[in-house]
Length: 279
Ligand SMILES: Cc1ncc(COP(=O)(O)O)c(C=O)c1O
Picture 1 (tube, rainbow, N blue to C red):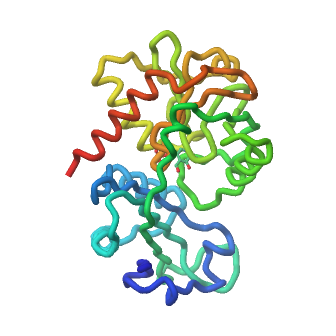
Picture 2 (cartoon, rainbow, N blue to C red; picture 1 turned 180 degrees about the vertical axis):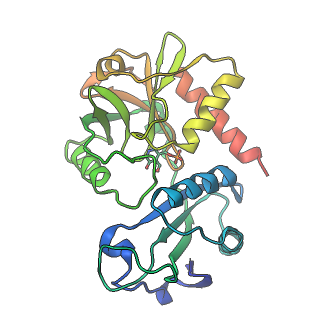
């Protein structure tokens, strides 16, 4: 597989990153994940806008976005599938380990690759998945898409050890998001999700799904909801770049429904249709 590393397209075997890279030492970097549908980057501009906010959020010097776009396009040319995922990571570069920032002339490390996307099976989508709730012990700048994902990794692992698909974070009794997806509920026909604050990642898929809902006349509500609200919801589902729309049918053992709810099924179909028709 070819990867993009610091301006060059090279074989992954030849891609080496120093152990002094600040991404490795401090998780001092940001990332993006972009879905490729029908050989097109879905919502490229929104991902770039969020990347820019993340870059500002960790006080990284801005990067050459034209070069980045060209690199991503070159990778896509090498990719021989229809549907895939671009992973893009930018770290604060390489210097002998010390907490303070390197001088401004240290170039960032920029890495990108594309791998095929593994969709969830129709069966899994149809049945919905189970989740548990866990305390949201992440830092207070979750809106920055940083590569420091240890709380998310630990929560996901806890879910797997309990035999369920994912964990949903809860802060002060209110649901924030899942380990790598946003979470939405449906109550009496109203689609509800937490508003964008410092405590959730402003998901692009969440935004697109809300837009689709509004276009279809589905009422939407950007208000925090509690764990009890979630237990009592008519539907619960996750949204994310790789997750797409994934129905949740059990939360902490409480049944939400026997199978994927109609709103989730509808929004998944609409999302895929939109993504595959954009060129
Ligand atoms: C913590 C978290 N929340 C939400 C999302 C969903 O964001 P998006 O729809 O932009 O992929 C992600 C995606 O990786 C995530 O890691």
